[in-house]
Length: 327
Image (cartoon, rainbow, N blue to C red; front, side, top):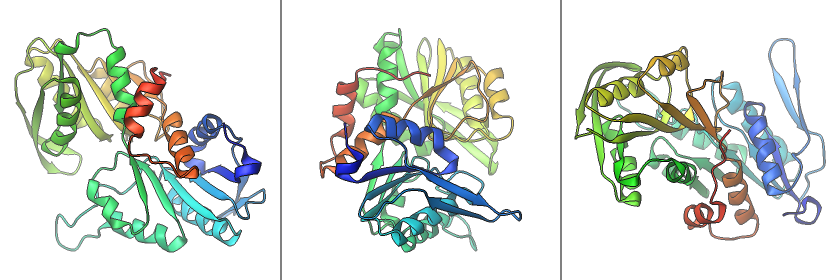
């Protein structure tokens, strides 16, 4: 598909998402770049490139999931690439961490998403590729090009592949903030959507939840960008099922799945949880299905290298692929 020597395109992996980076490189048509990380006894580490990247276009695939070492490793790899005379350095961040800190929601707190954008820019990143940002305004934190891809490119083909009549599908948002996402899906399929209104006592703790809309005799699909503890999704699934839904599924881009989240999902009313591989799963479950983002990221990389527009990437890849990569 692409020739590494002629185009001088390199795809490297951070340690947090090495398996995904390998798939991206394979889909693009080149081998994953050779890199290493030297670890000191005290925990300090030093990444290095084990091949010449002078004059090349370097793509670094790394989700900035906890611990913060993953973010710092990405910053160091960017710095190393610039110092090795790479022509361009593009950070492929499937999951942009700290995205929930996109504003001051109370006094005396940081806007961590903006801080990270400044750090990436200062390190020398020329462009960013990411997926399903928690807040759209994060794109405005950068003064460099940012390509924002959507999980719907994976979830819509999966939905169409399910043996469920389209007219029986109903989309749901687990909170008011996700109503726009549910509305877009509903408009695409010509369906309707409902909203779960929730009130939090504190982060990761739900005080109250109510369902706005009728779900009786429908197959409901809950949509969100992040699933962390799983409390919101599992509670919403239970309420929806109690209100007469035939089945409840969740399709969520980034599987943070902290603590005993998998146990909650397995014990919940959810029929299945469909996620992507922007974050590696800590453990597998028969209820959790993973769709690979590799071909989508590889296609975005190909278009950037060839100076092609990615504005229509969603539509063209949906029809071109025509398949669902279910693992």
